[in-house]
Structure formats: C-alpha cells, structure tokens
Image (cartoon, rainbow, N blue to C red; front, side):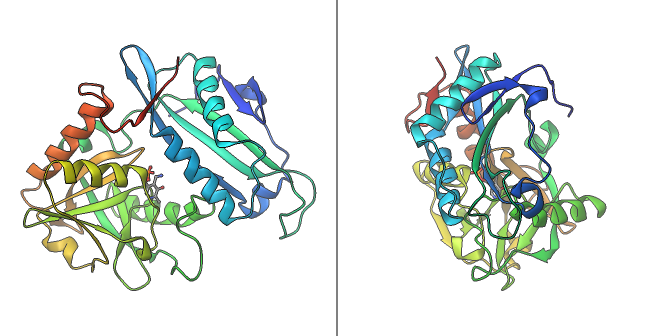
Length: 307
Ligand code: PMP
C-alpha cells in the first residue's frame, strides 16, 4: 500500500504537509529505537468518523511512555483532541491512526534523557490487515522459531517500536514458510501472541487467551473480545496456555486493531476444526463488526466521535 501523500501530519502541535513531516537522521529514535506508539482505528458510522476506544489507546500510549521514562509534553486529553484534529484535517472517516512518541534530536549516546520527547500523529485509510478472504475463511499460521522475550528481560506491555524488530522476524519467517502470519511462544513455550495480534482459542465451547505473564501486549481488541464473549454467555479463561493446545483447539482467532477479529484456519499445517471460521468465532466476529459498523448501539461507550 503506497501512501497518498497529499494529507497533513500533526507534529508537536502543528499540522504540517505530509511530505514535510521529517526528522533528523541523528535523532535518538533512529539510532536506538526509542519510540512508543499506538495503532487505533476510526470507523465510519452515520457518515462521520467514530474512533474506537480512543481514551484507552491514548492511556496505553502514556503507560508505554512511562515505562521508558518518556515525559510526553501534552496531556492525554490534548492528544485525543490532536487525533481528532488530524482526522478532520485529512477529511477522513474510516481510517487507521498512528500516534508516535519518540526521542528526537539533540545528542547521541545510549542515554536518552537529554533528547526531546516529540509527538507525531498520522492517519490514513487501511482495510482488512490479513485480507478480506482471511476475514471470511481464516488464515494459515505457523509457530515461529523466535520466542517472545522473558518478562524479566524486556517490557512486552509497552508498545515500543523496538519490540517490532522481533515481530518483523516472526512475520517474515512465516511468509517465507508460506504462512499468512506467525505465532510466537513465550520463553517457557507457552502461547504468547502474533507479531501484531493477540490470539484466542476455543476448546469444548470455552474461550481461552494467554495471560500477560506470557510476554504479550495488553491488547485493546483482546479486552473488547473478552467483554463481548462474556456478554454472549461464553466462559473466557485467561491462563498460561501450552503450545499443544494450538493443535487440538476447535477454533482459533486473532484479535487486534489492524487484524480486528480474524479466524485461523490452520496451525502448523494442521487444520483447525473444519478448516474454516468456526461458530464461536463467527458469533464474536459478527458482534464485533455489528458494533464497529454502528449496526447496534454503542453499549460499552467505546466510540469517540469526530465532529
Ligand atoms: N500484540 C501485538 C504485538 C500488537 O502489535 C498488537 C497490535 N497493537 C496487538 C497485540 C493487539 O493490540 P490492540 O488490540 O490493542 O491493537
């Protein structure tokens, strides 16, 4: 997907032309990966942009920054407003929103503390991350040979750019091996998450997803799915989950802002269930899309309108 470069990007309080949204090559982030970011979606409901769980995403951005001692020079409310302003300036409704907090240009060395904390917000149109076909029929997944870092080594809960070096390895490896996406285990061999998605399993009508101590991002879609599934009457268990369960689960699906709710049709060349979207996955996926497409009322207060 090439960018439409005609829009505006918000940088430290100003909207600048897309092509002028540049930083110096000696910025701390370029050399040491010093950034935290978010991925948020806005959906078009009744002709206007409605941002999905905006405050929760912005809170997670600030939590990620706090872990890395990055003092964001704006309040959470100001960032929420800046996101809305950026969507309006780009005349978009349904879009993907990328706020980035990064250590900028001043001096270089491992210590980031003297480098400024800069903020940018970009928005663009983005469809189904794992493809429309994957949404309907499921995707083929392979377990990665790479492991997520142990919880004692590197914060997995911070959504930091540097974490995605590992995600890139797992994603490229999966594609090289003919899969649509990879799945990472934690250091103990328990199920962790996809390179950019949380994972859910269905066994005997009950739903399972790995716990945060298995080195994963505290996904906001994960949280939405847990709530929706509970309200649909399913038992949802958040536990350490051994790899073996991947091969005996009746259904599996990914959940994430980009992936939304995507069924998994095979795991390591073993067909999951009937090899297509299973009934529990379909119910949850349908409920999720009813909400984000505005077909049912926003009963959880998940949307922030862009007026
Ligand atoms: N895990 C990883 C590694 C991710 O990059 C993402 C996408 N942000 C997720 C899980 C899903 O999180 P969310 O639902 O908040 O987008």
